[in-house]
Length: 324
Image (cartoon, rainbow, N blue to C red):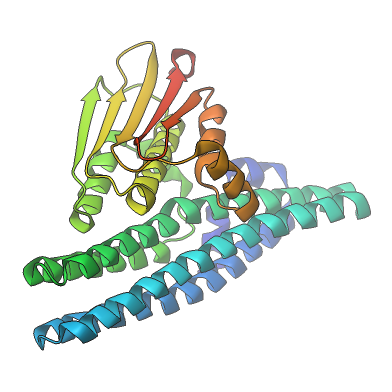
């Protein structure tokens, strides 16, 4: 990726507010992060593709024991890859915070301002990786776990799942190739089609049925709200697939009243909310804490109704004053 290309995706506010040489420094940092991440993900996705090919070969040879061993290895590999990406995201945020604190106290205003802008860019890139790559890897892991369960029950379904997983891995690779993404796509973002597409991908990998109900129209809702609401719903669905062991998920999206409201409910095993939030803060995972921050940034409220073995209901409400 050229310096000109990277510089073109830096926020217009930054381009207009700081000198060209500072923009170049920020662009160079983005290039460095992008290069490291592309190399990391190329290695991870090549490994996934190779293991899926081996699984397919073992099944064709009717060697289900070796196929099961390969699925088990792939599951461990994906779990490790998810942890690796999480650590990469966490290090981006930690490095940004530490360097900003140091330079603000030790250096002049101009350099401190530059570092603050670099911190904002790193945080934005970290969030983008969480919203895209990390969730795709989590979906791949759910698909591999399903293959492992189906192996002794329905070989035809396993073959179909492998084909879906290979398509998802390819889609993930193509998405990563575009990282970091252009920001002007925000103006053309459509919430309903994006949600339907995501649900189609999710249901091609998972056996969990999802009922999606819509009330009202998205016309007139600012792109920022729609994009963030999409990210929040995706995060909620990712948590369901990874942890809930649900047999049914319901999504209600209401854009017709005095506020936008979105509800994601499942009949899974639920969890201890207080313990989960405390754990996420210690581990550095974004998860529930991130969802709350995103909703509050939109002037809304996040309600999580859950108890162990009684399912989970996540409700997002954004007041009408933010719809203009």
